[in-house]
Length: 401
Length: 226
Image (tube, rainbow over all chains, first blue to last red; front, side, top):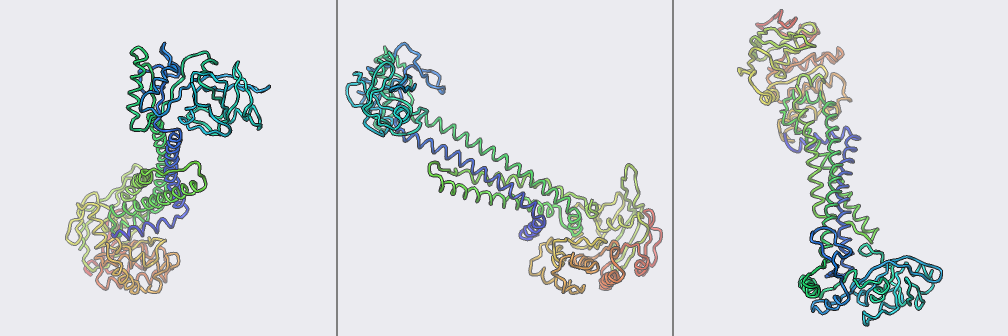
């Protein structure tokens, strides 16, 4: 039997049960489309996170006090060592030639008040260099001035939201606010930047690092942010940082170093795994569509028992009959998959045209994987009904039993 | 052409063993016109199914055209059915979604013959059974007699050596039944071996050789020499 005759015969029999065929196509298409759309969502999220990180500044090295020996766990937030990371350490690290800029950071929580209004926020102590390192942009006024970091000037820069809450639309510049027990003059307000690495940049205040040490009564730094001169010297900088710290901390480099890349790689790994998991769940829906195909084909076999008997009487070989029914199943799978792929790609285009903040990206493996899985499903679930048809006893089939 | 020897066929019906055929010995020569009659359940359809290689006997030997068939496998039997046997059924067994021409074309499609040759042969044989004008009609647009003639055209398009008809007029009125019989007998006159299973005494009497069956055995065989 010629291939085109097999296909034509299969197509004609599908056409006679139009509703069932369309519903099966729909199920197959939905399954395929969901595999592609969900993986596009995951891939889009991964690329979005990567984009956010590069906004933060690449070749960033973060120095934390204390060291955890177990790799892979979360870095210690507070030192587990008797030796603090101090401003003097920061000055020493700044002398490393491959360091471009460096910002010491202390962090604490304190009430910020203006008049009768008070708000408990995170207070960041740092220097003027925090601004280039964290890519902060100002909405009004200026950032902390460059100068002796050990001088505790009574100046502060407020986050966007904090300024809004305290001053309710009036200009905050030049006003005095109370942070903890001290008074600070507002010299700038940060532009609204949203969240960055889990910190709400809008709801916080930035004061000089010496003022923060006095405020929290602690000489220890929360961390030191180092911007290397480029990605190629990142590793060298990392080594140099360890050496400087070892020299200063009686032979122990009791700090934890985190590079942005390592953090990014971890996050990307997580997102990639999530994408695969979500696509896998969608693939389950494809196999459900496969069960539907099997159902349609089994119904077809039992409805067309007499026809199968006739084909046998006319001398159709078992293989020919199996091929006719398998052809129908494969046609359903192929058409459903093709439709699903088109719908998914069109959907991604449409989404990307209408939403600019977040882009869906179909990963290269998604379309071939979806197509392979759905065709395999069609083949796998179509095989049993086809074999059942082929193995019918001709005499019983002819009488419709 | 046909040589049955000691054919037996039993069925299991509800835990009981039914002897559909008991030790059948039968020879049919090429070009014969044979009718098989008998009451319901006498085994005539089972005999036809075995002659048509749709069913296998439990015991005995069946030589068709000098070739032993009982040891053929399913695929080989399908091939013999396709190339040498034709069936006409009481219920016509036309595929409802296909036109008359497409139904007739089926054996050619299964045999892998090219579309151009198929068209010619289909047109030719439909004209021969007087249905040249009805080629594009679907079965539900044809009368019973026309449907059975389409079925006959389908059964004979590959020039089989043996045509078997199981109650070919059972679903037809007298006039269309007559046309169908005429078509079958014309084919027989052209040299095709014809076996008709029927309840209809008048139809059965038209055959040169008349076999009567009862309870799975041949009880009468008249006109064998003819």
